[in-house]
Length: 157
Ligand SMILES: [Ca+2]
Image (cartoon, rainbow, N blue to C red; front, top):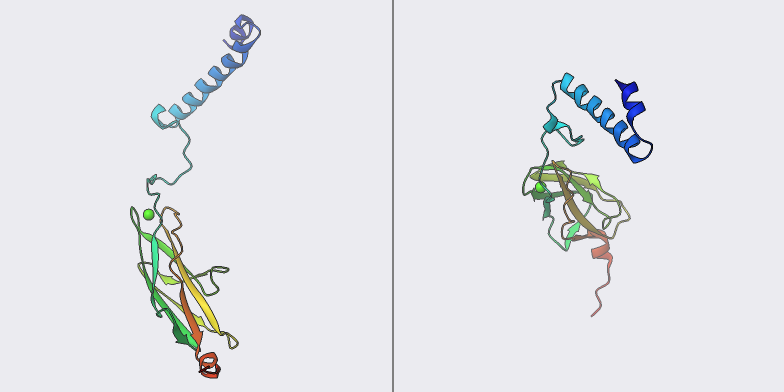
């Protein structure tokens, strides 16, 4: 059969298309042998349940308040909400977005931050990712100051 095909095909474009057709039929037959219907032939590397969710979750810092004074261990708390899926993880930055650390929790989350001894002020940010891998935008920043830098700051008046 394949010999007949080889001899009959003219030189040129149909050579490759004939080969492609044979190859395709082979693939179709292979899939058919595996019990896969032609409708499922399109390769899809996504998870078993393809998601149409394209919206990243929104994370919000609830505590501390912007402008708060912090010293020692600071517990950062917040919430996150997603459209089209569920919140899969939340990350916190205490350096204005340079580095990120995983928080504990999803819809409600917390992060224990051991403030460094030399720290004077920091901008805390939060961001979340949903179960489809959509990264949400970074939350509004919350600025905290160290209690010692506050008390040692001379009041100019
Ligand atoms: Ca989503």
